[in-house]
Image 1 (tube, rainbow, N blue to C red):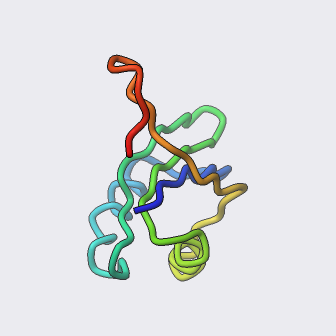
Image 2 (cartoon, helix red, strand yellow; image 1 turned 135 degrees about the vertical axis):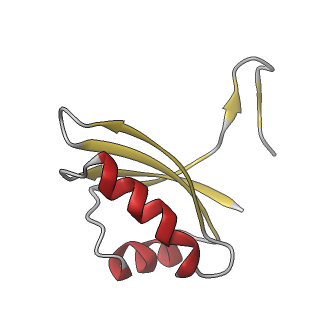
Image 3 (tube, rainbow, N blue to C red; image 1 turned 135 degrees about the horizontal axis):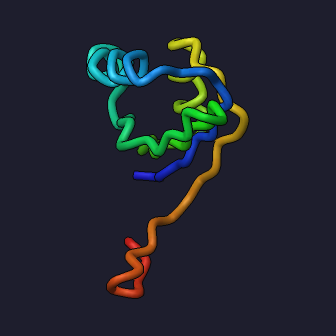
Length: 87
């Protein structure tokens, strides 16, 4: 499955993100999952890791949930301890 980092500039609160995460399984299409987020609440920037078949499907989920985003980046995960990329 392809992996993505979505960059958000939005004033999400901790409570709002927790509620969104709890609701996510009820509306996610097959093959799409929100893996984790790194949150900089002071600057309202959030970096969320997703798995999805492609960017188009991920954009549909973000639009459906009215989640603002700046950019979507298709990424590969590198394990720095093992010094290797995931396959």
